[in-house]
Amino acid sequence: MSVTRGLSPRAQSLMARWALIAPIIAFYVIFFVWPITTVVLRSLSPSGKFDLQNLVLTLDNFRQLLGDDFLLLVEMRTLRLALFSTIITTALAFPTAYFISRLNKWPASVLLLLILIPFWVSIVVRLFAVTSILSPNGPLNQASLALGFGEFSLLYSQAGVLVGTVMYLLPYMILILYAGMVAVDGNLLLAARTMGASASYSFFRVYLPMVSSSLLSGALLIFILSLSFFVVPAILGGPRDQTIAVFIQQQIDIFRWGIASAMGVVLLVATAICYVGVLKAAGGFQAGGVGSVQAKGVSAERPFRWSPPMAVAAICTVVTVTILVVPVLFVFPLSIGDTGTVVFPPRGFTLKWFGEVFTSKIWLGPILQSVVVGTGTATLSVLIGLVLARVTNSIKSTTGKAVISGLALAPIIAPAILLAIGIFDVELKLKLTGTTLGLVLAHTVIAAPLAFALITAAMAGANRGVEEAAWTLGVSRTRTFWAVVVRGIMPSVVGAFAIAFVTSWDEVVLALFLQTGPSKTLPVTIYKYLESGVVPTVPAMASLLIISVVAIVAVRGVVSSIMARRRALVRERT
Image 1 (tube, rainbow, N blue to C red):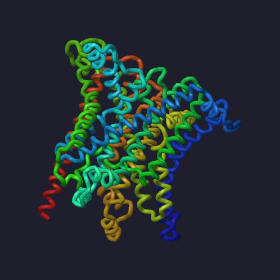
Image 2: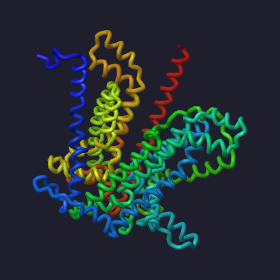
Image 3: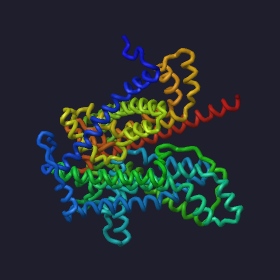
Image 4: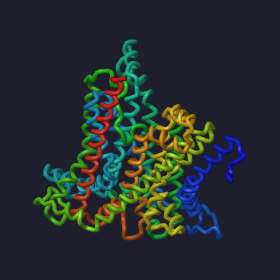
């Protein structure tokens, strides 16, 4: 006998929604709410232990954060890094995005590809290249010595951390700004000029206000990411250049959970304040365009013209593209040297290190582990995204939409290091640490919000008339959802799968804490080599990853071009 028999259609619909969303709520409670709560309770414990039976709450750990000169120095160093990273990234990204948005379609597409390829390359691969460039044996120091300027090494310094941070953040800022700039109606600027406004007046009083939301959102996103950075300062920074995230990891290593958790809570509060700042200042988070090359908008209707400001923007673009592309290209010569150590310039020529990558268990195991974890994460993230997007778009209550969206997107504002220590604590109790399932569930926490954001936007813009027509023909709602709705937004579903997979593939912090067994993911394996000493197979593996990214981007571009031509032919015939 059906449980819903005798209930009204509205009650049946409500029960069906709760049946769909209940497992997802349970997932978020276990792997997000519980870990965060655990960290907060540890921060309030004098011993740093999480014990509900003998719960003692105190603010001593937080008082230590405010009273210890060394801890204050760590906090100020992190804040200074985030501030300088935001300023430099914005200063380079804004003219670059503006210059690209003014170009014709093909040169703009080429420059965007040069930005996207480093964007998709793993951060540990790019950091390996940066460590080689900035090291005492790197090209910068060699050039400085050759020119008579003395030694010039930025490795293990605050300047080196700043360089690595800016390199990582530039693609985010450029793509966010570009997405806002191509949407600007050029006719408004033309109207301002015809009314007698100067070029500078039109730019500052007309153009800049129209892209201000993207500018503010991007700048605050950069600041948020910089605050919680772990991998970049851990690799490029020295013992005296600790940031909050690195300090937390070191305190966990010596079992000082109380002070580490308190520092994590402070980081979470700061991140949440910045996120609220995004919502207040920009009226919402404007992140469109990240990870994709968008078509030129109405801003491309006006022909490109050179001017002194445009020349400056072109110079900034050259500098920016150089910062992004050179580290990627630098990996290849390091992978062909015949010596047993990594040196620049390479000595001799050999491809044996590539062969070792394909035959050694040291690399085959992590590659397989990353593929399995990435596939599982992407599949689970897409399923969560589909269900939450469906529920969000089917309810009429604004409050209900806000609650579901807030729950789905909440992990985005949580620092990775905070999630790592919290999820580690939870999975230790659930006996999931060191397992592939545990890593998939942890990665899904940070990948599912991205999948949800992409799918819900596509589902909101889909035509519901086809779905309703299928209902009137007697097709069940479940079958209609999969055969009509999901099929109609399949490009976005595939995109969500790809983004979730790449997020898992590139994740280091969670995997570093949770993978306690011998089977490591690929980024963690490379990270360990960066810590202990690089062997020639590392640049070989990095080169293969870069070639894979270039191949995927190229295939995606060809497929998109073919599909665009087919759509154009269909429009012509109709």
